[in-house]
Amino acid sequence: MTQPTNQPIRFYHRNAIQEVSGASTTRTVLQYLREDARCTGTKEGCAEGDCGACTVVIGEPDGAGGVAFKAVNACVQFLPTLDGRALFTVEDLRQPDGTLHPVQQALVDCHGSQCGFCTPGFAMSMFSLYEKHGHATTCATPCEKTRPSRQEISDALTGNLCRCTGYRPIIEAAERMFDRAPLAPVNVPALARTLDGIRRDDTFHYEHAGRQFDAPRTAEALATIKDANPNVRILAGSTDIGLWVTKQLRDLGDIVYVGQIEAFRHIETTDEWIEIGAGVTVERAYSELVKTYPELEETRLRFASLPIRNAGTLGGNVANGSPIGDSMPGLIALNARVVLQSVAGTREMALEDLYIAYQKKDMAENEFVAAIRVPTRTGRRANLKFRAYKLSKRFDSDISAVYAAFTFIADGETIREPRLAYGGMAATPKRAAHAEGVLADAHWHEATVQAAMIALGKDYAPLTDMRASSDYRLDTAKSLLYRFWLETRPHDPLDKSKLDVRAIELVEAK
Ligand SMILES: Cc1cc2nc3c(=O)[nH]c(=O)nc-3n(C[C@H](O)[C@H](O)[C@H](O)COP(=O)(O)OP(=O)(O)OC[C@H]3O[C@@H](n4cnc5c(N)ncnc54)[C@H](O)[C@@H]3O)c2cc1C
Ligand code: FES
Ligand code: FES
Image (tube, rainbow, N blue to C red; front, side, top):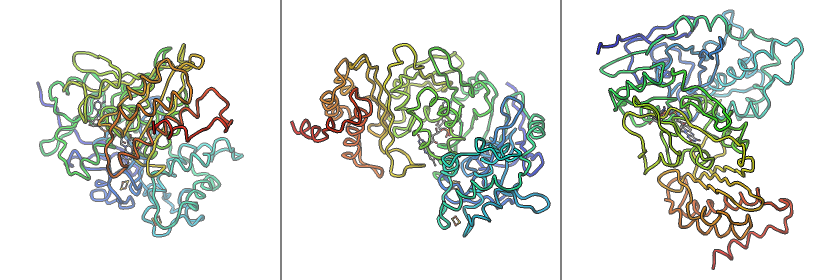
């Protein structure tokens, strides 16, 4: 086999195409900005995707001749992943004549900055919102419909922490930035043409100090690379892996990056499935899933922060398979399947069967996750009852202590095919077989639910850690099942006389 040529990393930054060689394969975008490009406006706070001081905006071809912009955390993104993309930082906001960008001017007007450390990150999250709603600024008459709602503004800023100004003036600035004289948004057609000029048709190959970084464009090319070198580390959104480097100082070895595989970015809905490619971001995946399962909207909003959801992928969440990951319980309760691929072709299995033990999956060395298939809500599933609940110490941007997802098909008042899946309760995301046994084909009645709550004690023996104690986990696992009952019971949910919480204690005491 011929040795691939080492290619420079090419990306658009500061109005020019940058070509970079000689940087480590895991050099972060933040390190590059601050130490190599000397663009020190972007700050480092936590180096683990939590504080937002390092927020930058990435532009990439949207597949329809345009450019999609998204805010991400530069501290956990590796430089070679920028190949073929555009990078915008706080240095790009001020106009050549010195005029402040409306984002910056609004922050000044609303007193949205004190020490200023967090401000570049906030400014870039706001810039991303400004670009998304940029057309609103060019309307002759400001149009409320095209402006972001207060909820959308809050969501866009969940990944940015400020320790001195407080959030009210910043949120106000994000509302008022649209009031200022409109600034032509980024010239998207010109940028799209520039990015097209640095687009690669084949695998991008980069190497440094004996470490290789490959970005294939097809799943077949990925399969070949993984087959030739099973130890190669698959990199997707880098929101788990980035921390292995910045916090654990791990050497990742050779890397194969899946972010340029077009086939991994598809979302396709058939009569049977919503099929989500492994490379679809968490934000896109959930935005699509909530159309069929609006019960997942809270999970979408509370899964990390927007910059993490913009980078992290559903495939990465599923492949990592953390027992406290947020996607697995919901997907398992919904009876989702996972499609695995290798040089031998594809195979699929129920998602719950992927997880064998802590950090152990039913996946061969040369296999990878290609897609996730979530059943649609048609036929008998039109009567599907579904809820998903996340418990964490903070509302936003926090990992779950317990995550619970429940489904069953309502056959009149009879429970059919119950599926109760929990995260944070065992070494893997896991169904509650005993409790499901109690519910199956039973009447959807409070007594049935209480019996199932008791059975949960046989299903799980959760551990105590910094997030929660074992007792807390088991108690809340039961309470969440009770809440599911309260929210889906066939009686009038407002009839408080039917709500007898003490009955739970009585049944448990027996
Ligand atoms: C600040 C912060 C907050 C977070 N909050 C949450 C949260 O609220 N809920 C939650 O669930 N998670 C959270 N996470 C974790 C992380 O964002 C998710 O697990 C995310 O979905 C990982 O996806 P990724 O694309 O970034 O994966 P990566 O980091 O790129 O990879 C993760 C793992 O998956 C493997 N992998 C990736 N893609 C594939 C594939 N196609 N086939 C096989 N293996 C693959 C990688 O080799 C690696 O082992 C948080 C992370 C951070 C930094
Ligand atoms: S430095 Fe805190 S999110 Fe990147
Ligand atoms: S202005 Fe000081 S941290 Fe936000």
